[in-house]
Image (tube, rainbow, N blue to C red; front, side, top):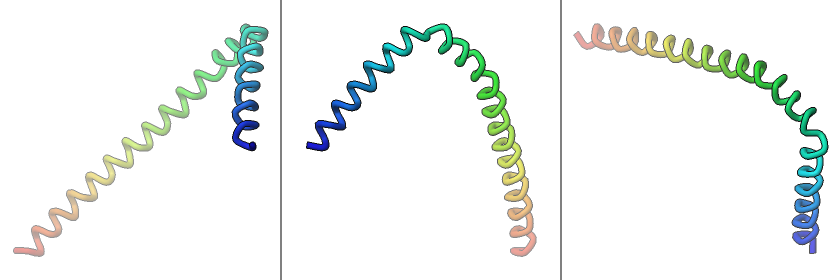
Length: 73
């Protein structure tokens, strides 16, 4: 019985959500416009940190590889 209540609750939520989007479309668009720049900044920072970390890892791997070659000689 709980599964049916969950499905019914989901359908009611979808209907209320669609009604809310239609009723408050202008506010929703303003929210989207306001949230895009911070998302881009945070995404850019994450990409920057990931790239710098990858460069550091690559440099460290090259150092380890050179060290291993010296030890083999």
